[in-house]
Length: 185
Ligand code: 5GP
Image (cartoon, rainbow, N blue to C red; front, side, top):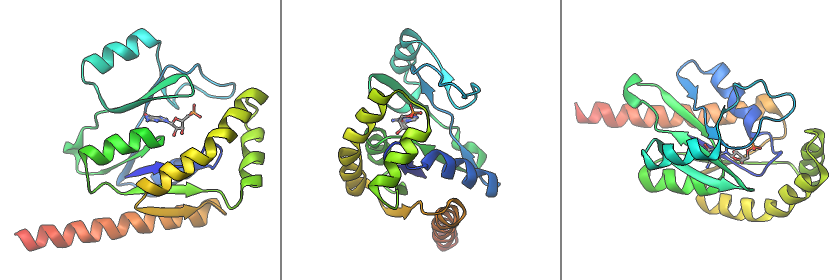
């Protein structure tokens, strides 16, 4: 399952909340060449230099990877043998690659209730003003790419309510999968 959406929309918070609430769901830990932000503890990403990242690309280590605002981000190929579901919180180019490899992937676009709310949330993160402006400028593209790719749209008006919605989408997918499996046996 993939969660996408513009920066500041709260998709990271929703993703973390969803895995906290659902024991069968694990959050994929991405690699990035972006330096850690103040307040990040180091477990948000595997922080690496560009050379290490590029070597991993050459080794076929990533399920998907993309350049976003000058930094590289990638999802290590998940070990799907465990039987659980994996949640990726990534940007749209990466979601497109996932869809290419897994055409049935559930892709949830998270939207803010309004643009002014999104701007407020981006500023609250304490990033430099130039960064906030670049993120706002890319919001329109992220939303239109997101609309094109998404199988579901969730409005993040309230964290618990939006998490409920994400988990009920997951439950519906699991029910459908069980029905297909039972049909085959
Ligand atoms: P941030 O630098 O704010 O943590 O993340 C910037 C963007 O990169 C966000 O939209 C986030 O979802 C996306 N991102 C994080 N990890 C990955 C990844 O592994 N692959 C891709 N394609 N995007 C990612």
